[in-house]
Length: 175
Image (tube, rainbow, N blue to C red):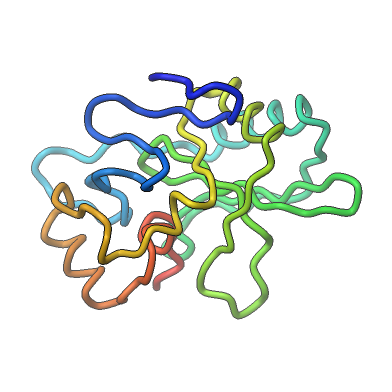
């Protein structure tokens, strides 16, 4: 992994990387749907995710208020954190080492609104060395994304659900 400096974002060398153009290419498993072979990566356990969030939020001066474990929907773990009247969600992909920061979704929202907080992003990156996406990365439109690594089942789900952005693929709330 290569740290891109003060932003708290890491770029992964090899299978995929993040940068100003988003996750390129979008990695297999991004939809959290998996088809064999090969075997899927081991899911990121809720306990691991909670430990990372507790440590990172403490380091950055935030307070952890709630966890939501991934399931059928949403397909990502979510931790609500607060500091000085601001509330954010730390989203963690269930299969891939990806975090994103977002505004708390409204009751009927199907998509996250991604945001950036440098101090919290750096703390997450320091604690676990996962990629922490900046808002412009999940905002890349699907039609500009490289989906070549996705399996047939994942491409089928994308055709069915019609996500508009890479963020809607990676942190989905499809049922």
